[in-house]
Image (cartoon, rainbow, N blue to C red; front, side):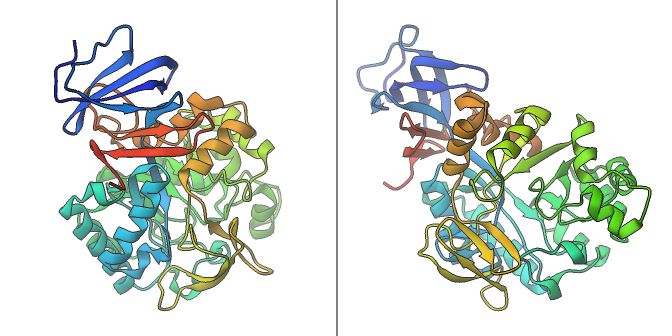
Length: 401
């Protein structure tokens, strides 16, 4: 018998990391999950609050470790208002734990972003949007030829006087640097010492440079096949014989994880399938990499700071710079999970895992979030049969109410 004064989600299929529970039930009290199972094994107290999933799915809240903004706001705008606005729009799409992600920019702009995220995190206003778990320190340490849609003048080589000051703020949980840059290995060692997920991104690194980075603590590569080295790009940079690139290094080393943007615009279905089969659901994360044009009408927008970020165009499906390539996505995690489920052999269970538990494991928060398990936070989604978000509960509080 479930005691009274609990909230019970029922009449749905519960999505667990390894199976589906038909006619499932999820019970939580206050902000923690107390029971997960089938209606046959869990009896409900008469005074419990019932949430009817209406025959759809009951799943875990999504965890986004690479995301720049939405609803007209970019985290690099550097204000608590922008952070809150972006966190709210991603919550509408099922993200309950979010890692705001820096772009290239000045040290002052990045510091303002970190402090604004910390102010929202300290306020702990989880019911007002996705929970700010930590920041992904992404820009500015990119390779010059792999800057992509980021402001080129805002990139630079790693400077310990700069990044140690940022690390000491206590808000960073993921740290990226291009492996070939001078000082990259020292950056990786320090980030690894602090327990961050250490990543390589926007890089034209060779196999040897990746191996050196690996020994320094790097274990993840950002948005696979986007702004990363290839055998031809390494040959153009270092000559013959052709050398291995980031792609081969990640695929060969089982300890390495990576991520894909499954918006249907960045990668074709066969590449999503290839990544899933080669890395598996425990080492492949779904990320949105969403920018401020998410949930906004088509038009021109700035990527990064509203003051001087690079201009890009959104057509409502993806961001792009005419004649220069894509400029991150404009859709939420619900689209990524739905596409991965429908476009590949992953199916519902693995697609949801890659958008929830896998990123939670990689950033070290899997004991609190990422799956529906007793003792974890009540971050729960009610989804339709086609995986569209119907209701969102963040720490037991329903978002949007």
